[in-house]
Length: 486
Ligand code: SF4
Image (cartoon, rainbow, N blue to C red):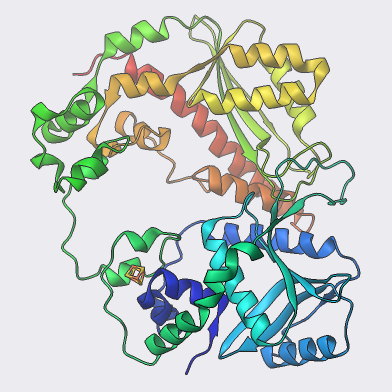
């Protein structure tokens, strides 16, 4: 029978069918976007955890896991002082590789499961319990066990010096009951693997604690959802109507809706966009001149690369800026750093150089642009006053659009990527970089020293085209809001 691992037991605890599919029908999995990026972050944090123990020994799974089991057993038998990385144990058919094992002065072991999150999560606990259960079953004296997570208060002071990046949340005290039920859990998981595919029906468990990669397989026999599902109603209203038994937005009584939900319902049922030109114009008239249409792209590293930065700090590496005068003249300026050095100072100086004092700064979802400007202000005291002033002057086109425009093709979203195609013959489909996630991936490739210079130039062009599209999209949205609908 197929063996179990920590992650397979976690899959079983979410859903027996998920475990079965992972073991026997992996080809049905659809991992979705972002999975690779999450793995990359996990690996980066894992490498940092090892780098913090230069005397540690990595137990390689070469040529196979049997070799890792053998090496681990030998090192334990030799009373190795540790730390050990990826020490490998098997108990009752469950194989685990332990991220970090450290010897305590009394000879026992401290076990750490490394996570890239900034705090332990509930589902980490059973992962750790499975590991401790296996270790104890193998006769290892586990004295403490922790989730070793990223401490987002850490600030990089010296390049590459990561002491303090990770923090242990001790968990052994919370594991008792969960360790005690591992025998039963493992037996039940093994029983599932000995049978045909379970026919567990899809439900809330399919997205908690993780989105299941087999959703398409399990839902393949279900009736198609309505063309306009009630879930397009924003801010949780759709879920509330669904809980009352409604699936189709057309079935929801109009007289029981108000505010934005009534607007979304009416625009969807009639097919006519909601457009309040006068309301939009009145709000935009409050903005002064010239107008600086601004959009940032940022990157956030789990393991900080630049001195003075924290884990997961949003660091701007690019902006696009369209400067519009009252007479309609428009110029474009941009900033993009792809040499791999800390981009913050150059970015801050470029902003100050390009944005005239007193200009109205306009963003789409301005809290983000404001937070970046305030962050840069905090980084550079000599530039702080000008950057803070910019943050104060930052106006937001998103709530104006939300109040005064809705087309049913937005399907409940006012993201600029959803709004733009409903207003103009323009979208992001033809661009190599289509969203912020793509931009971060392309940026990481561009700053990688191994990237070929010609390739880097192409990546730069793709990033510039994307960010420029974002500010042009804002301008088009604002202009369309001011045009009377026919
Ligand atoms: S989609 Fe849902 S029912 Fe199907 S395997 Fe995943 S969690 Fe289980």
